[in-house]
Amino acid sequence: MDTQLPLIQASVEWAKFLGPALAIGLGAIGPGIGIGIAAGKAAEAIGRNPEAASKIQTAMILGFAFAEAIAIYALVIALIIKFV
Image 1 (tube, rainbow, N blue to C red):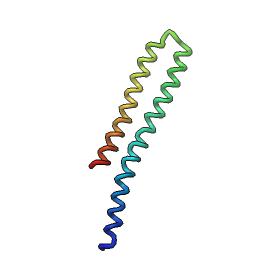
Image 2 (cartoon, rainbow, N blue to C red; image 1 turned 45 degrees about the vertical axis):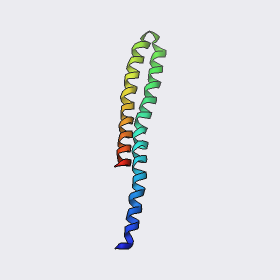
Image 3 (cartoon, rainbow, N blue to C red; image 1 turned 90 degrees about the horizontal axis):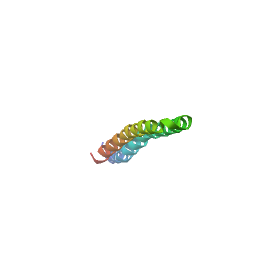
Image 4 (cartoon, helix red, strand yellow; image 1 turned 180 degrees about the vertical axis):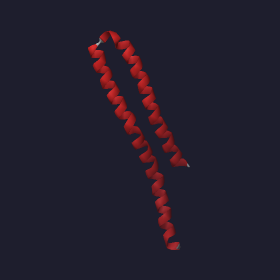
């Protein structure tokens, strides 16, 4: 039984590195894709209706803030996993 203890400890150490990496990596994919799609659609909308640019930009920036909040939550989770 004592021969497995170093293997278990090594597995725990790898999990401490892999967990935060997966949390921030996977947590940033969704907001990144969402922001890219939103920016593209906003550019199309402004191109079609330039008079509504200020309203479109306001809604777009608000959407960006909400999407970035999700990425920040992923960062916080990654830091919690890393240091706890």
